[in-house]
Image 1: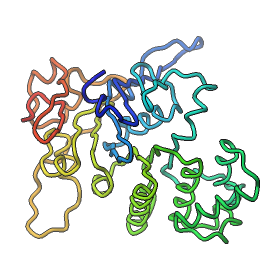
Image 2 (image 1 turned 90 degrees about the vertical axis):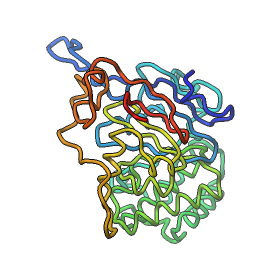
Image 3 (image 1 turned 180 degrees about the vertical axis):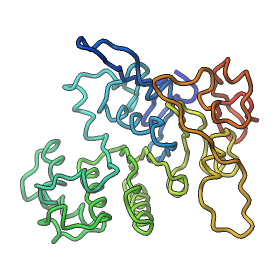
Length: 329
């Protein structure tokens, strides 16, 4: 097991050398003509009660990583350890025992809720799936969850279309909390919301973590949002982990050129602010045929011939930051 993934002995989740390739099939016989390299050799861990941020541009493999952790997609190789037990190859019958502990909050609160179900039934569904309770007990539990996420119990009879965007996301959070999970994968949970509502949802997640001790894998492309909630941050580019470290250290002194560019792209409303890194040029290469060596080299301002010849290993620098770059110091 890698040093990146091992972490503390009591780590809740350990992802080690996670790889996911999607086959490309063509022709009458659906022969495999290539693969989409969605995630390649990614390792990280999450401690009990911790929030790990996962950031990067669209298409970098963030959501695929989240789906793999939830076992919503099978992995090509690598391992996923949950509370000391590998779950990446468990059959569905054995995986069910872990389902209630692994929940998700999705990006779009408009499409992640069943429009034909009342709010009460949406939140009650996972309780019915995993617990043997009477209808009265379930209703009481749902009412408690509504209040916990900032909704009123009298709203339980409403349908999703009767809620605002922020209220729908609160409803999604209540549904995720219903089976008492230990880890929630938050896949871009605030990107579809107004800025003011984003802050409310982030504050709610932090409050719930403080009261319940739940852990989060918080997936986002907005670094300013991740900074508010994550203790550590993982930066991905084209399926690869390029930097990981404590949030304060990574934002104060990013080491990878890609991380520097991402932070430089965050709008700053400060007089005299000077951009610390040049903006990225060009487009992300195709994940079907990624560049040799360092995958970021085609857009990197400090790339050298070495970057095309050898893939940079993930190595530890100061402040517990791990960086996959030949020239980072």
